[in-house]
Amino acid sequence: MGVGGIRYGGILISKIHQLSGRIFDNMLKGRHIDLNPAQGRILFALWERDSIPIHELARQTALTRSTLTRMLDRLEASGHVRREGIDGDRRQVLVRLTERSRTMSGEYREVSVAMAELFYQGFTELEIEECERYLRRILRNLAAAEDQTTSEQDRTTP
Image (cartoon, rainbow, N blue to C red; front, side, top):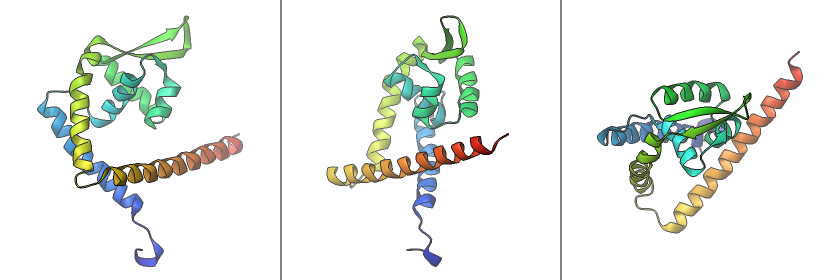
């Protein structure tokens, strides 16, 4: 335990995020993939399931809708995704991969595998499963707290 009862999990996760993002970005540049890690997260979600509504993509990537919209603007401008209305309804928008993004999924996945090998170097399979189980619990806790905060703000907003 840290000084004054402070735990360091959040700080460690933040440091891991920053460092892994820099390493991942360098690996992508070495393969001439013009994405930052957050853009890759969006495409990764679409490689798992293409043609999904923006609200579902926001949930899968844990990005706010406004952040996601800005990133989709950039991804669309660079030819990676396209947004299409559902049955002419401009409020219901699906995000779809372009052929360009579909062809780069293999290389991106190779970099993701290399990152996973770095993450878990020296870990047993059991330790990896345990670590990921704990991380999922932390993610669920944070998502629930965000939902609660959002609900409270909605109730107090005039």
